[in-house]
Length: 580
Image (tube, rainbow, N blue to C red; front, side, top):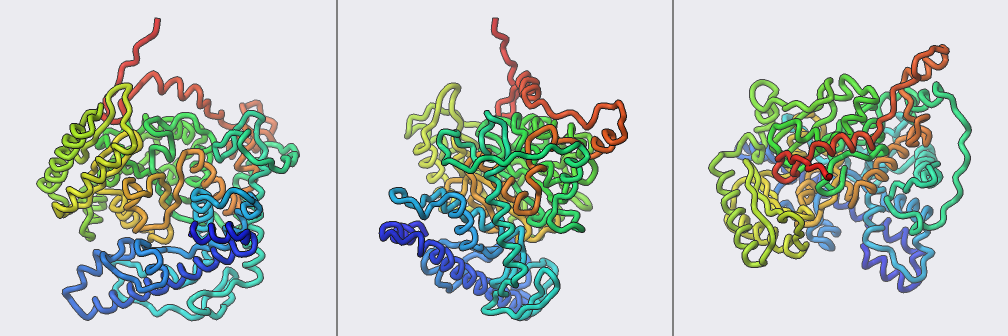
């Protein structure tokens, strides 16, 4: 994609051909999705007539692509490693919106960059999930583990108002009403640049102000009373009768370098806390799928998420909203859930309703692993770490846990990225050649390297099955989607968004909420917008009570959490020495 756009840039034709290039890739993706969907249907139909293939069909449900399935599409020939698309990607629409905001086709000396293409793809994925009327091109992949019958795809689909429209080449044309809503949605996204902010506050992109292009001046906001602010926050949807936000029903997040900085804790991020709170408050399930594995020692995960949990408590999040927050430690090994006491609790593994028992139907599930196979993987990985440490003269040490083994730097030392990548690729090759039977993940964690038994593909599949949410209705957000990263495996089982920092993740969530119809006022990080639901009523009644719940003091939360320090690698608590 970047190569094709480079040609247009060199010929000074990006302004006239850029949108057409993205439109061409959009067409190729639609074709690839239709052909993939047809192959899935053929496989499922054929499995009905062959009892030997029924188990294969069950274990290869829509949330797990069938191994070695070759889709004879033009896109597959151009990009042989291309995977599965669970939704359409309105690339042309996303490019036009991004270009209107940043003017990339007007540049004369700097071509469109890889990161800008990544941002456009991220925006396209968000638009596709929040506005499902754009999800033509073959529909969702075949799903339903227990439903072995496939209904024929309709040639006529209803639009958002119940009116039917004839499909053309598997894609339903947009109606005038939908096209108008498209424009309104993208205008709402573009208007985020006018979000009022404090003088010393960085923008959501995390860039310094001095590095930003000039933007239009902020429009002054009229003063609103507390009840008005609360009413806005309670009316977050474009559709007046809608109680949940449009978009993904489940969002999975990576931990380090996504929700918080690498090796740090979630302590001082009021914007990100507010956006996660709004998602939970309006029906979205959130799961932190992290490589950090402290088994079921809930207090250690709570320490890593201390600021976020404190925000939930101060805002009075309760009941089902709290219970929609999960954390999956060790990528897919330890599932915990937030309770009404604002503490994490282990989800039962065995017995009726246990997450391990209820997900044993697919082959890679943790319920099907044997202790001998787990030990074999960890032994081989540890031997590779030892060899790499010696060969590259690394100032590092090796630690081993129940279901993982890692290479971490010694105190005040650093392992170079090249050395970490070399180590990871050695282990991947060793385990692949050994033909290990269990899923695993060997990855570069930025400052360290790890091998986990299991991976995020399995973690996402478990959540899809346990929560009953199909792949096309969930989204995974992570920062390591290269072949030495631990988010790489999740690409094959759900739509995803690729970010590189907590600041970028904050901007993505803000974009999602804005595209879903959340007013700018509700997204502002101010005491006015953070007023609780009953604050306005108390103010209107003229009571003497303190209006609203107090705002979280993140500096105080940071200070308190710094009293207790933990080695994020081993999970051991560290006594902080006082300085005299």
